[in-house]
Length: 153
Image (tube, rainbow, N blue to C red; front, side, top):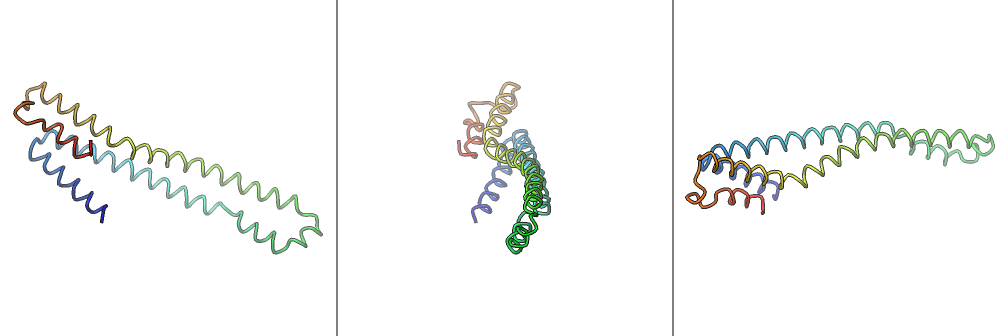
């Protein structure tokens, strides 16, 4: 329900921004589109890397095999073979986890910094519109601040 509420609020704010001042609405729409695209790309890469990691991870199967045949392995002195095989499997998975961690960090950075980038864009674009004479700062009762307050600031 919260996600639907946020989505409806976002759509309403974009529509109001287009109605009140179409250049500012366009800037906000572009910002939202870039953010959504970046998040979608990072999420798809993370899910692909997680799937690849799960396909590569054979350590659980190897552990079960070792526990089931522990006595035979001890009698054949094949412990070193299984230890090497287990370490190779873990090292292969570690590389995949490092790649996944980078994209998860990108997702986290995007979500945490989006509010600030949108405020910078809104205030910067509003100041440019005032400077170029598209809007009057006093007559519009600080529409720029209202748009910033949509993001909770």
